[in-house]
Amino acid sequence: MYTLKPLSRDAVQSALAKAERYRLLNEPGEAESICLDVLEIEPGNQAARISLILALTDQFGSDPGAYGRAQGLVPGLQSDYERAYYAGIIAERRAKAQVAHAGYAAVHGAHDWLMEAMKHFEQAEALRPAGNDDALLRWNACARFLMRHPDLRSGAEERHEIEMLE
Image 1 (cartoon, helix red, strand yellow):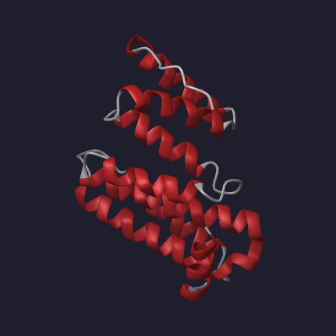
Image 2 (tube, one colour):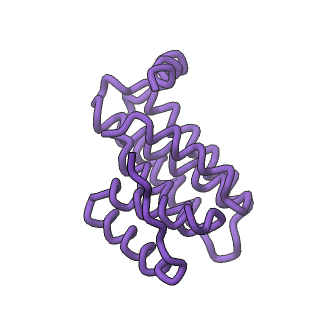
Image 3 (cartoon, rainbow, N blue to C red):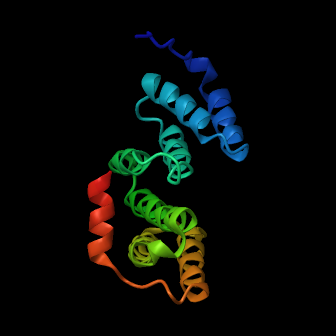
């Protein structure tokens, strides 16, 4: 077993910038590792927590445990708005990863995930700071995805079976 080397507090901002770059380079595992290093020395760092959630959602198609880890981070977000917004992001990205990975074999579960995302985005909309329409943008993206894919339909039972496999 290895003992991880701690990040210095002076390197936190630079490390978070690197995590963002790794996400942009489609290397979410590297971003995840960096965020975990930051959270090890600054457990309350909200930027690291959010970046980690996003890095985990980038891995939904390849890492079955990423969904549970991402969900586990949401309660640690400081505001009700952020908890609702990022819960919506997790559900939305789960749906889209499911469609991308399983194609239309995932029509039932993906619909339900998108509906859950839209519910969270509506909660976030009610709590949003002035001038922040991010939740509306995400709600609209989910609605457009559903309109482009009218064959997606509810399937609560199938979704439960998928969750049981994780």
